Amino acid sequence: MTTQTITTVNTQQAAEILGLSPNTLNQWRHIKRGPAFHKFGKSVRYSLQELEAYMEQTRRERTSRFGDQSY
Image (cartoon, rainbow, N blue to C red; front, side, top):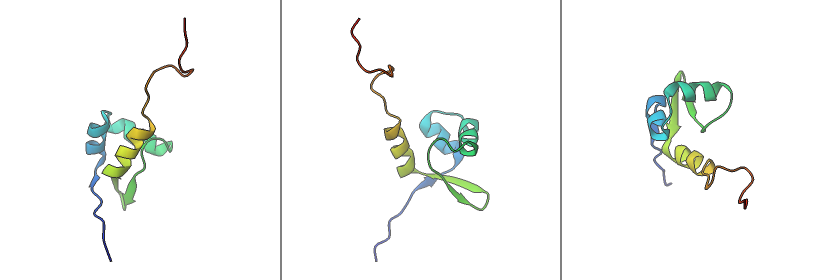
C-alpha cells in the first residue's frame, strides 16, 4: 500500500499564501466560499494541493466579464 503525504497549513499560513487576511478566510468558511479546508476538532487546516487548486480555479486572464471587446 502506498501512502501519500498531504502537507497542510493553518489559517494564518494559508492567508499568507493567498495574500489575504486570516479574517477573510474565517468569514469565507462560514459562508461556504473560498478554498476547501479540513477540520480536526477545533483545528482548521488547508492542504497545499487544495490551495493550489483554488488559485487555479480563480485564475483570470482579464478583468472583463464579457471577454474581448473592441472599442
